[in-house]
Length: 296
Image (cartoon, rainbow, N blue to C red; front, side, top):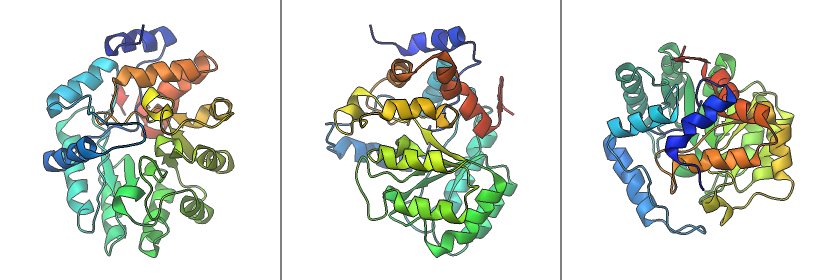
């Protein structure tokens, strides 16, 4: 029988960890969230339709994550045009103020003033940044981002970057521009969203080559993803070898299956309980600065 959301807490308790450290969760301003859901309602992917499993009011979504065992909840907004990042960062700061278990998140866009507002976000306590190269249609090597990358590299704050070409390629998706950023700032703490699918192996190369590059598990190995962007031969073994660099990510609430399916898939892919403990809790908790009780 498939694992259910109600059974997820039993799984992590049996592993002896205090909960789940999911680095890839979205909470967005309501107008933006409605537009994101409308996009998924209309999109046709190689895997078929993309129904939103958790199309619920914000408070209900928060309670679901808490019941699953998340000890901290990122918001991970992302702009698609200039002028959005500042007000999104303000919204994320307000979300962190009103939600006790929120992780203060922030974002950026290549535009004049980006260095200043990244510095302000870091000074105000941002613990994770989100970049979406495909939605934003910008290059991570844009010179306007140079000083922002320097600040982020120096801070050690993790940057979750969607740069893979799934579910749709963009003019700047793929591994080469991300590699160029890392060659300039090799100490950057980068978390590759969706493990870079479908360029799985190319982004795994980065995780092997750069000390602070991680892969998040968002949608990796799920039935939906395998039908369209399957893992290449030998990839599961690469994930096993990257035990301290694979981080739980799910894309909640914008997923076309129950949250528990991702956990069940990781359990199936796992070479052992130590790997699963690191992926479900230890690695994400380290990146987000969590304690056993949640946000530190």
